Image 1 (cartoon, one colour):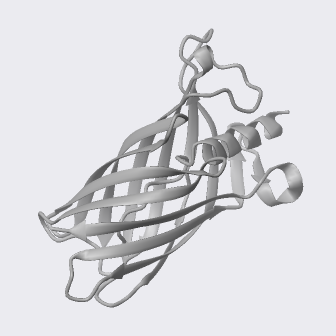
Image 2: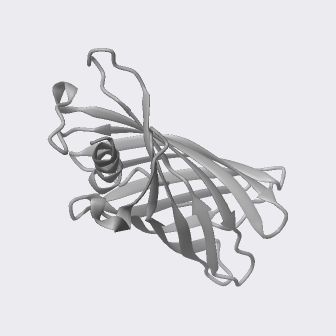
Length: 220
């Protein structure tokens, strides 16, 4: 029962809201004070409807950046969050994104206070970077899912489960331009329940969690 519940929680967080992983950000490191604005679509958002995102970033001292983002699957969810990345040399960066997500629906047959649920998703990442005319990047991420039912008896933020899997993407900056496009795929075949039990979404107990993102950005 615990295993099944954790699989449902993770699947709902991704398949219902598409906010469980991360908001796509350019894989190119930012210079000090450089600003990047971007927009993207994630699928799945809710059923066949994608989630739309807007993101703003600024570079810090040529070694890091910070960001803020918002998103929505119309009439179903909205989310907002912050992110930060640290550049480890020329080829690798580590990052962290945190999202608060509001779901306006009753999913998975679980009663929710006034038909709503809050989710907090925290996603550490280790990623390769893209420079000059390079395009491909890859990495690893581990989204942590936390749920909160406002007004429920004994309600509190409670860790539910986490997932683990690879990231692969293409980040293309147009020649002689500050504009770029990005395509990213996240696949989460493994998970860990709140009790510490490791399970695979490929063993028949649940779907493989994934997120496909496509977007564009402009550097200033």
